[in-house]
Image (cartoon, rainbow, N blue to C red; front, top):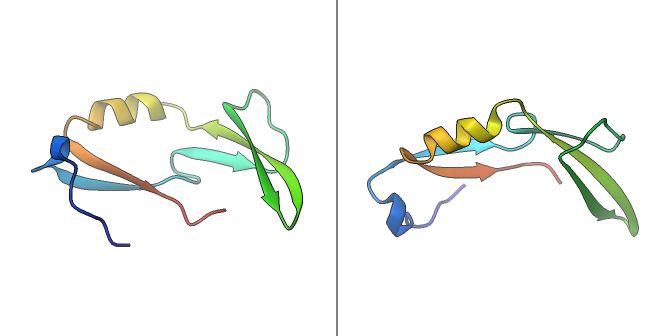
Length: 78
């Protein structure tokens, strides 16, 4: 992974790289109770719904660390 220059607001901060899938969120092709998001994705010509649930505490975690780190979120998933 190659990162570009830091945004002006993050200059001088360390960079924290976080994986999205199974770290910050759980996603499933199977319906889940109370998903935070339902994301339609086209796979081989068919549209499938991906049900996404944020991990407990993820909003607070990101909010508390954001002032101290340049936050980079990536995924190797779809």
